[in-house]
Amino acid sequence: MDKIRLKNMTFYGYHGTHEQEKILGGKFEVDLEFAFDLTSAIKSDQLEDTISYVDIYKLIQQIMTNSKYHLIESLAGNIIKSIFQKFPIDKATIKIRKPHVHIQGVIDTVEVEITRTRNNINE
Image 1: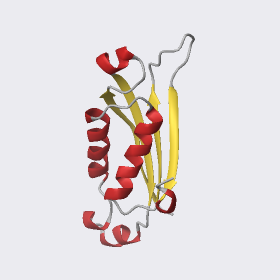
Image 2: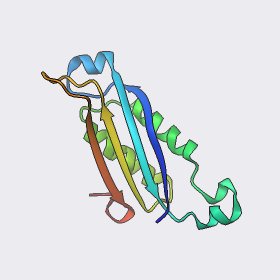
Image 3: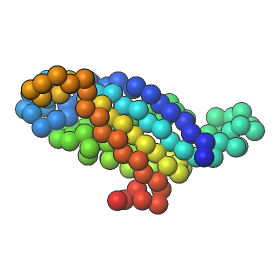
Image 4: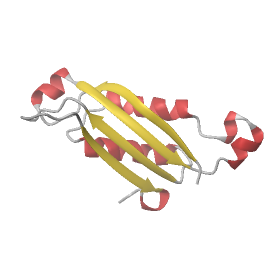
């Protein structure tokens, strides 16, 4: 299966369970990999025969910056569900990283990864 990847998209959002996260916000990093048949795009070299990664980016940006979630698990799940609703993809994997987590200890980042296919998107 053919794939397109958008790596390390960075957004500022207000997601988290701590009150300060909801008020001050924080940085989030997002990777998306989605699969579908690129044969038509390869042959035609035309944008209408592929999925615009600009449109995908704009959808993710809108959800990341205009919504508030307690859990990045829920945020990731809703982004991937929105992508399946809007675009004819077969499979997608989203990763959301939260670089500055409130943990007493040394940690680089927390990351959630969700993979869904068109057949199991509602699970």
